[in-house]
Length: 142
Length: 112
Image 1 (tube, chains in turn blue, red):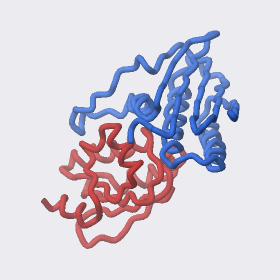
Image 2 (tube, helix red, strand yellow):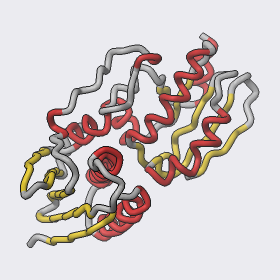
Image 3 (cartoon, one colour):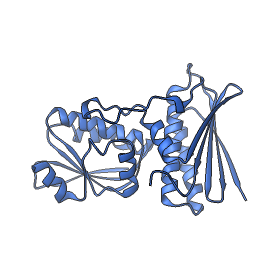
Image 4 (cartoon, helix red, strand yellow):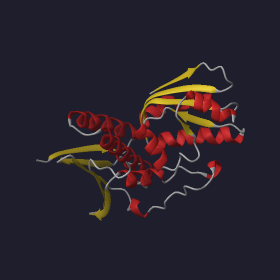
């Protein structure tokens, strides 16, 4: 049987931090492996940070919806924001070969999320960005 | 997140990090870390207590490593837990931030 959890936060770093604590508490009560929880945290932090930093063209308050569906040890994380259209799957892949002085961390967050999740999909629906991240016990990176 | 400066018999800044290098963790320590890893001497960090890292934490490390590199110094991590090491390797940082087994290996690397 699937468990559904829906969270709504404002577009601030403080709210991301509180949400991550809440979701971690939820994960602790489930029997997830350390690695799936680690990957869930990376995806949450990277995607929400990107939205707060770059999604909005104004300084208004916005609501970000985070849905967590847990079924048969599979986690589906859905993040919905009303920022401008942005498909993270089309973002440039950072250059991993440059030397230390030319290395940039920009873009790493999206890259890490895509590597750590089993599947990431993006759709634009009703003027909102809908990002879906699938995490299974067989995390790709390990 | 906790940042501790340890004593060292070598001319290195010896640090111990413990906790989660998430948004909150980075905010807690980034000013102190930046001051301690400002470039004058090599920095060795015991990562054994670090439970999480994502791009914000990586940005903090990379920024310090660049400053150190400008002065001809290095930032070396040791005792890195497997999941944290995997995240660093996935982000391509393992090639520019040396990761070694333990403190003696870190010192050997800096003396070589």
